Structure formats: C-alpha cells, structure tokens
Length: 363
Ligand code: FES
Image (tube, rainbow, N blue to C red):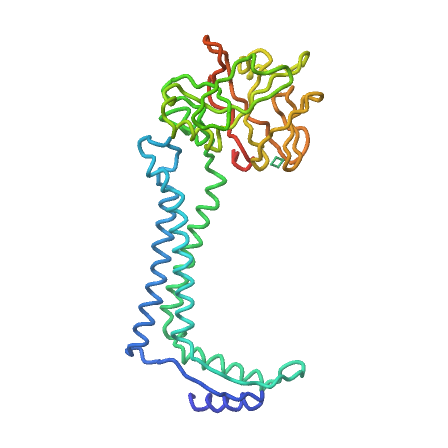
C-alpha cells in the first residue's frame, strides 16, 4: 500500500509538473527522541491552555472584584483582579497557539516543491486520486491520524478556552457592577466613589485650582457672579499640610466638577429626587462628558446649556444637565452641595451617578 502510494505521489507530482526539491519527513517512530519531545511540548502547551482557561473562569467568578478604596482592606486583591484575568486569558491563547505551531514545526514534514502554474479548469479523476494520496500520505507521515492524542489535547484546550471566554463574555451582561442591591456589606460600596465621597464623615470642601497644587482656595458664594462657573475639586482639612494629597485631588480623573451659578431669572425644572442638592441658584455637576469623558467646560448663559467641545454634546442646565443634543446619552451626574457655616461651599455626598463615559453604565 505504502509503495503504491509513493508511486501515486510521484506520478501526481509529474502530472502537475511538480519538482520535489527537498522532502524531509518527520520522524515517525513513537519512541524516537524527536517524537517524544514534540509530544511533550504539544501536550504541555495544551495543558497550559486548559489550566489557564479554568483559572481565568475561577478568577472571574470568585476573585474579590468589588471596588475597595485605596488603603482599604483587600485593596491589593481587588487591584489584581483585572491584571490576573488578562494574564490568564492571554496565557490560554498563547498556549493554544504554541500547540498549533509546535505541531506544524515538529510533526509536519518539511517539503520544498516547485510547481508550474496551469490554468485548466476542473480536476480529472487522476488529479483527485493523486491529491487524495498526497493528503493520506501527509497524515500517515506526520502521525496526526495515528497519534490522535494531539488532536484531542488541542480540542480539549480549545474547548476549555472557549468556555472560559464564554463565561467572561456572558458574565458582563448578567453582572451589574452598579447594582446596589447586591452590596451586602455597605450600600455605598460601588465602583464609582470619587474624591467627593467621605467615608469617615469629614467635611469635603469645594476648592478652586489656582495652578499651585499646594495652595488651598475654597469657594464662597460671592466668588461667582450670576451666569458664571468655576471648576472645583475636593478638599479636606486633614489634607491641608499634605502636599501629596493636595495634588492628588487635582489628578484623580473622577474628581473634576463644575460649580454653576445660574443667570438671574432661570426657571429650573421640578425634580423631587434632586431637591436639596443645590444651594439657591448654585448647582454643581461632574465636569466629565458622559459620552467619552472630555471636560464639559462651556456654558452658554443665554440658553442655559453646557457644551462639550469634543463632539458637540449639549446639556440643559435647567433640566439637571440632561443631554439635549449630540452623542452623550446620559445626564451629567450632579454633585450635592451646601453652604458650610464658615461661608464656604461643601459637598454633602458623592455624585448622583457614575461619572464619565456612558459605557460605564452597564445596568
Ligand atoms: S466627549 Fe463630549 S460629546 Fe463626545
């Protein structure tokens, strides 16, 4: 059978005008060192994929992924969640790729052939017979048919990887990180805490940016004329002598807010759930556009509209920064404010919702 096939192979090559310049079959003996090394490498790579895929699924389901404030218990574990998931899924893909590459490099025969191009349409029965012999010979020589353990190992690895990717992919649709009902330890334990959140109850003031990170200038009502605005950042008295904390308040991307003083005679829409979040005609909102996070820094006093310069989203200040034009689909979160007895503005809580781009809001 083998010699018949060799004949057909040669004959097929001649019919197609193929000149086999070099043909180095793989070592077919199952006890040869080359075969054993190849087997170990392929099986090892497949095992890496299986282990990494299972570990990724376990990490995705069981690792403590809920937000923990910096310095809080378990913050390090929480921070490892995403890198761990990425590393394991990456390893799984690499393992499978390595198994495929090693199979090709170690087990497939190396062949250099030269074939003249011919343009006849269709294949004769002779062509088909010689082609089938070529394929059968390749399977025989590479041992892929006989050594189906490679195929099975890679199939298991690919299935495990597929299952893990499926869990991670589907999980994003069923697990809502913003859902407060799932938070059993603290109703405020959500990922959208910003620097305005005060877990220990310390007063958080509204602070201006003077360009000097260590200079503290707090905001008073008389600092804003009707129709004017000022960017504000959180400040706590306990941070006054801490240059690092003072600078960090400006650096944290979630912190920027804008304090607006409405033009005189502005009629605000009624909203019971927003009652008490402003001080007279002063309102504060996140400065991050809910489209892609650009700073919403333009205030058109005539129309009472806020505008984002990046893609022209507009927000109606008389309707609690509801989007009225452009790609932004969500209102700017409001920062609840009040006037402290010492005459400065303070935040009475965190923003009313997640700040920044709309894709954060998965629920
Ligand atoms: S980032 Fe504001 S409209 Fe796109």
